[in-house]
Image (cartoon, rainbow, N blue to C red; front, side, top):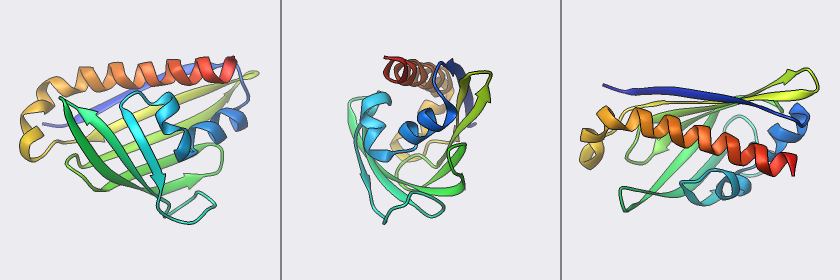
Amino acid sequence: MGIDVSAKLVIAKSRIEVAQYAMEPTNDPKWTKGIKEAELLTERPIGLGTQVRRMATFLGKEIHYVLKVVEYKSEQLMVMQSIKGPFPMKVTYQFDDENDATLAQIRVEGTSEGFYSFTDIFMSPQVKRSIQGDLKRLKTIMES
């Protein structure tokens, strides 16, 4: 069993502004609820091959993992794949023009391993709620 969930939301800001903010790893803790710390491990500019270490909490445990950008289109698409951590996953951020606004989308795909392997059955709804909340926080930040 695995996870494959997505969420989308229209944000009343330009695609370039939204994408630049969301694709900047140092902003992760500001708009992504579960992320407590994010550190860029590679040189700028952010793009294909960029690696980011994140620290999050889940079920009362601290989780450390590293994501690597495996697909990138400046100010439009960033696909990251975990290369270290307990959850093999792929995270996609996509930003498209929507009239004078931006259609922001997040997709999370993956499975749990080890201690967390039992969680797949109830993680999908939690992950969906989480990424919907992340997009709402991103919208609030961008529109304020």
